[in-house]
Length: 272
Image (tube, rainbow, N blue to C red; front, side, top):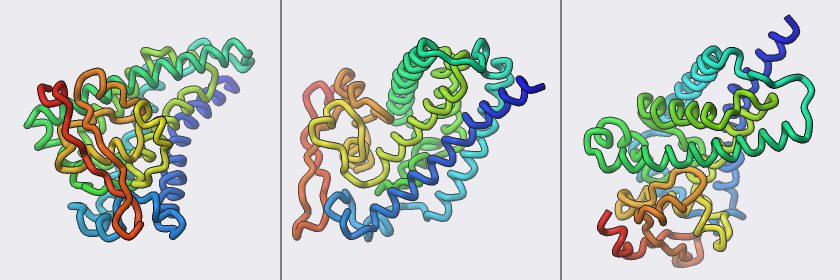
């Protein structure tokens, strides 16, 4: 019974921790976004955030809570399908097991990132999918932190639940030490919030590789909606597959924050 209880706690951690982090981390970002000291990093004004979006924050809140309930159910189902979710993991962990877990988390990140890019691109190129599913997410024209996962419930199942489960199983995370799956899901949660927080905090030198509010913010602009499909960690997918839309981050007149200015797409991007 002790072993069964330990496994149950580990699986609960994998389910609950990313959700707790989502609200805590997005809350920090929302507070920072409204702090006067952070005005110079804002990509959109407070008025734009309040007036340009086509869905209320109350509706977004209800949608995100529903998706988190779906996430809890998905982790419970994945636990059943993997026979308890920890496979060969034991109570005694070693340096080797932690290194293995780190490798599996890295593999899961790459697999999920590639899956999300492919799905995101398809969701924009297929009119039926965009009209009936993905257009929900683009009701948020000016992104903000706690709206990071707002979208159609069916798309959440396809993009997040199915994609995340594929990455976890393909990487072998169920056999890792307790907590490895929670670390992976938490990393995805944090990155998704960073991409939607509306604050340009990522150093310029990292923007050619790592995703952030600027790269994804361009995608939410009318001119960028068919570009910049990299959805979580790496912008490499856009560069490799010709869907990258160059942009500049410039100061607004009067020095009140920043503004995204899309540049003309490259020849390869135009042909995609």
